[in-house]
Image (cartoon, rainbow over all chains, first blue to last red; front, side, top):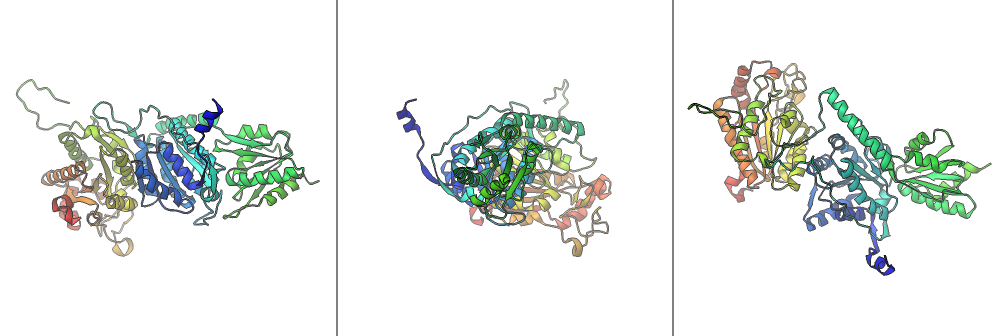
Length: 360
Length: 260
């Protein structure tokens, strides 16, 4: 491709707020229906959808609750429609019921969680304290859903299309896990919108038209053997996702002594700490999981082999660090730095924690 | 399923085409079978089966998807009106109904049914009220009559402790988005015929995209009530109807748009 053509095709660079960028990216990815309920710090997604979805002749409903929203999503997605729901932490808790049903009945759907501080009503500040909730199952029953964690607004835009694609390929709900900073911040973006191709489907509810047998979308399997068989099928699917869909990014890891493991906004702070550390001779690298489930376990082990230690940085009291320790299995010291409730660690705090790790 | 007869006998009663050829799991004497039949007869008569997407609920009717020859989606307890909303909004030309019991619709699903009505969703809620949680063993429902003994109101429902029966269909009739709300029963053959005409009106109004429609059917639970099937139907006729009067509660299409 010529330089000229590249220039012509390159998307225009615009200043976008994270929440609005994710919403617009979903529309550009062919989202047919959006259901939401107001909650800070993600209300801009709902507001943009309220304006844009009717403009596009698509479905928008402000539901009576997060329970309403997630169940409208279940109904719409059961017909094969491309469906988005968004909320923030307390609302996501209410959606756990619907997520479990969708995982059980294998209904594809994308859910954005713009995390705020918890537990309970918590705060409206940025947080990563819903890692366990997103990664370890969310609702009741034996299931996992893919969790994508963007670290920039540009990446959030790209991941929206990927999220729909994953959801449909594996017939599963997918979570895009952002934090309040990503939702509220504005960044210059050349939005790489993409509308993934629609798959041929034979399970979704379109009514029989008298031409085929009725289809049922359900998670109920009362006979224990039947439910075991269904769960075995789900687990095989999860194993396939874990094998094929791991995503991560590294920065300056080859010569690093210390590897910071962080995702989302925490990874942005870690990057500044890395640059400051490197300017002072401290060799820091970054390992950034993009899929939190499936967690890049083998990739983290390979990337940190022979290093002096790992520092996990999170906007929580320490959740992802458990998966880091499970991956590392004691091969290296794994340290943790976390801030809670909407407080962000400063790059210098992160740098100081790295320095302590190599102090004689 | 046309039956070929070789002599001049005539078929006067047979399974509606919209029902699967299956025995149901319902208890002997339960009204669900009658309501299923009425719905299926209307599907046949109105040629709706091929265009219908059913929305199930949790409770005794959880297996409704086994019996109707339509596509079906299962819902979490109480959420059927929200699920039906999602289905209908992205498939606006389909016929969409929920089939819910009183525990599902009038307790855990109160918010979902009220707001589906408020939005005037073009769905029909078929609401089978037998005043008890049958599936879980006969506990008190929001619709349980005062004084009625259940496994969780063993001394009888006392309003001081457990409040009053909820007239949810009257409440829904107040909402402008409700095009039609009616209450029938399957306690006697005459009432069965009347219930079918209420369902038919609701289905026609959904087809006309008039808004939200609901038909409550007072039914029985011989096992949960500790009665024989005939005694339970008599109880509906003599006692339950006193708390839940039968009739059309609102028909805004008939009244004209001004009444909205």
